[in-house]
Image (cartoon, rainbow over all chains, first blue to last red; front, side):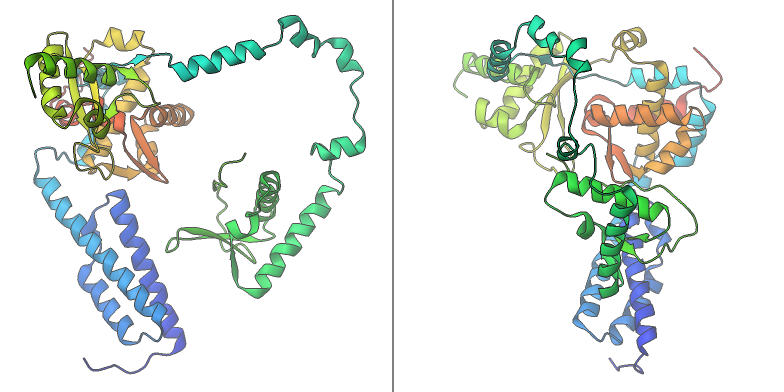
Length: 260
Length: 181
């Protein structure tokens, strides 16, 4: 295969972006069960061919391999799509949509009930659960004693020093603006080294309370437009950037793991 | 298997395993049955099926994502011939919730088993207020009728076990939209 004229750096970067976009599109198509024939195989393969001919690094070759793999997954999905469409189970989604819209809720419910066979099972108390219940019962203080904790008199004299409230996380040593400025400074320092920083890198600290606090502060900074947040479909990760790239405000939920 | 008595004994053990809920999900995995009942557990389940059939019950095998062999599959006992609408209502279901379940399962099945949750919500919001759609879908996911993977919705393990999807689609095609029954 003869090598074509070498591409400029800008063209290579554009081609790389195209391949990344293709990978994301293939993955989304397979994952959501969308029409796999919407992806033009010939055009995609031509694109990959010209990309690999100008590949300049190992990363480019890896990216090409990844794209080929995802394209083959789309071909597999096309096969499944054809089989499904020719099967007895196939009903046009548009037809189902129109039926759902046109039918009353009572009829829909009746249809479901006529092909619904609920699971039969018995909830039982196991030995470990029984042991746990006995242990709980033995430790339980009498009702009188428990209620006295919340008696009116004890509530009236409850007081906390500034240090105690601070330890409990009810008060902060600094004002909210100061804490916000601290995290903004920290993020901007990270961004000065690289163009974008992975979201989990910023909030990823051992202490759970600290992690939640950082996530909260970060969301405040992003909502106010002081820093930006982008989603990269090729890595399936969120990245914090210097400024917001989107004019369209939208709400995003990001899981920050389980707390303990 | 040695004798009929042995088969009966194994079937009794299998029935206990299948009916008693020990985990969050009802039923047992094939490998658990194999360990307790023996390697011929599929034969034992066939025999058990014959017995419980007269009580209107049925042993069902359900494959979850990525499972291919009976050892990996989940075995459950379900009602054999379905239930009446009044029984569903008295079990705590609302007609609107049942309608959402029917529409969701039929729509997902017609799209090869997975769709974007936004598409499903858009369809359901034509008929129901969005807060009700959100709350019901959350409940259906929690019960296992639907499965949410990021933005993708699929039919969940309970949906596969309890709902005859091909019959549902068939009824959807045949139904008379005008009749209110």
